[in-house]
Amino acid sequence: MMIEIDASIGEGGGQIVRTSLALALCTAVGVSLHEIRAHRRNPGLRAQHLAAVRAAAAICGAQVAGATTGSRALSFQPGPVQPGRYEIDVGTAGSTMLVLQTILLPLSLCGAPSSIVLRGGTHNPRAPTFEFIRDSYLPILKRLGFTAHLDLERHGFFPRGGGIVHVHIEPRTPAAALELLDRGPVRAKSARVLLAALPTHIAEREIAVVRERLALPAGACAAQTVAAIGPGNVLQVQIDCAEVTSVFAGFGLRGVPAEEVAGGVVEEVERYLEANVAIDLHLADQLLLPLALASGGVFTTLPPSAHAETNAAVIARFLPLEYTASELPGGRWRLAIRAARSGAIEGSGAQRRDSGAMVG
Image (cartoon, rainbow, N blue to C red):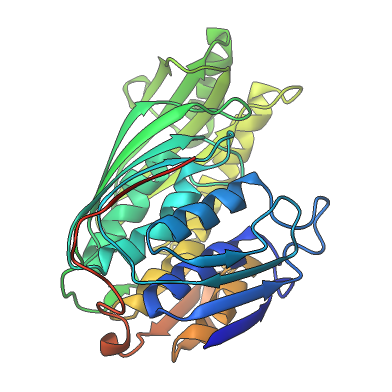
C-alpha cells in the first residue's frame, strides 16, 4: 500500500515531508510525495529534509527513491522500525530538532529503548530550539506516554552548525487523553541569551528590552557565552505555568538590531499571555501528531496556523482522525483530536532487537 500526497497543499513546507515520514514509520504504510515545496523560493528537498529522510530510512531499512537535493518527488516504503543506537549527522547547520521529531515517536512505539547522537544545528531560525524541545515539547509528550531525555554536548548555530545532542528514548507507556484548557497561574518568567563569538553588548541590549517590557527582575535574566564552531545569538524567554511551560525564541541575524530581535520575542510572549490560552502557537503546531498517535486530547491556543491545519490534513491521510478547531470568545481557540485506534499503531512493524547505524 502506498499513500499519495500532494506536498504543495496548505502551508506547503517541509513539515509535510517530516509528518509523512513519521506516519509511514508508525503505520508501516508507504508514502509517495510529489510537488514537494513546489511554491518555495528553492523548491524541492533541501539538506535538512534529506537528513530527515536518511534518518527515517536508517531506523527501518526503508526503500527510498527521489532522495536528492532539489527533488520534488519522494517515494518511501518503510520496513520494520528497529530500536537501537544511531548516529545522525545532518551534514549542515540544518535543525537536529526537526530531524529528531521525525523519528522520536516511531522509536517510542518500538517496545525497547533507543539512543541517538545528533550532529548539526541546535538553534536554528524557523525551527524549535534545543530548550523548546527539552522544556516545553517533551514534558507534554510525557503526559501522552512518550518519554525522551536530551543532553546538549555542544551548541550549533546557523549557518555553521556543529552542534551535538544526545537523546535517549524510552518505549511508550499507556496514558490518558490530554486535556489542557487552562495553563494555570504563571509561576515564573525568565530570559536567557546565548552568545558564541559575539560581543556581550548584544546580550545586554536584548535583556534590557525584555526586562523593561516584561517587568522581569535582574535575577530572572542571564547571558551565557557558549562554545561553538561558529558565531551565534539566541534570546529565549521561558514562561513557567502550573500546567505547561512555553519557550519563545528570537535569533540574532546580521543587520538586525538586538532591540528588534528582543522586541519580536516580547510581542510573541505578550500575545500568548494576553490570550490566556494553554498552548502557544508553535507548540500547538507540533502536538497534533503525538495526540493522534496516543490517546487524543484537547487544548486551547491562539488561532491555528497554516502549519497546524496542514499537519492535520496530512495526519488524516494515514489515521482515522477526527480533528476540530473551534473559536472561543476573546480570540481563543479550542483544538481537539480524536486518537486513532491504538491497536493500529502500537508495535506496528516494530522489532525489539537492538541495532546500530550511522547516518551521515
